[in-house]
Amino acid sequence: DAGVIQSPRHEVTEMGQEVTLRCKPISGHDYLFWYRQTMMRGLELLIYFNNNVPIDDSGMPEDRFSAKMPNASFSTLKIQPSEPRDSAVYFCASTSGASDGELFFGEGSRLTVL
Amino acid sequence: KQEVTQIPAALSVPEGENLVLNCSFTDSAIYNLQWFRQDPGKGLTSLLLIQSSQREQTSGRLNASLDKSSGRSTLYIAASQPGDSATYLCAVRKGHSGAGSYQLTFGKGTKLSVIP
Image (tube, rainbow over all chains, first blue to last red; front, side):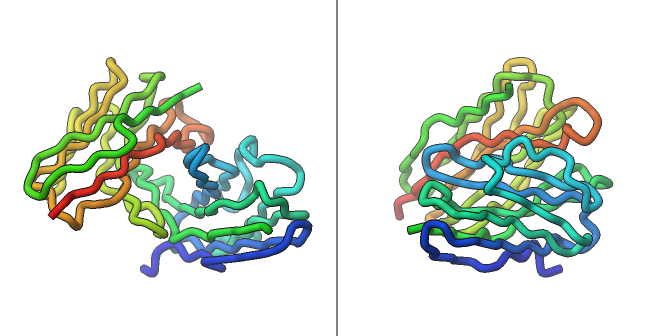
């Protein structure tokens, strides 16, 4: 299996622009998670899905952030409009509910908002 | 609210030394605990997962222990090598059943440097 695949790996944009991050989970995994990592706050859970349905989005910072999972093999995290404080590494992770819950991470998308 | 603490934040050891990384958590009602490794600019790689009913797990030179009642876990690395240099994070999963139990709370990690 190719693992969790994220794109883009790096994104530099200007304040006010829309940013879309993409994730393909491991085939067969029914849970998908979006995390954000910063030096100050470490890893924070933004939202997670089970069987393509959002279960908990309490970690989403504000209305500028939205996430979708239209099917079992694709999810997006959108920021509109972006702000400099959104600069971080965004990770997608997946796991199977039938397993012991071991979490598998993608390589992350490093976002810089100027 | 669960809080996970890892001390020290950074550790430097000479090659060949055995070392212990620490993780503490405030709520002992956990389902499991995972140790991850993160290399610079990379994602997290799962190293070991310990279920709440287990005391320890071993993989090669790595041994993770769990003392749920005291809210502590340790990651023991034997005969450290320069290739072990990375940031090590622990994460605990909530103990109750249901959809919310899949949330992990992460520590901020210990950055390990193994000096040749």
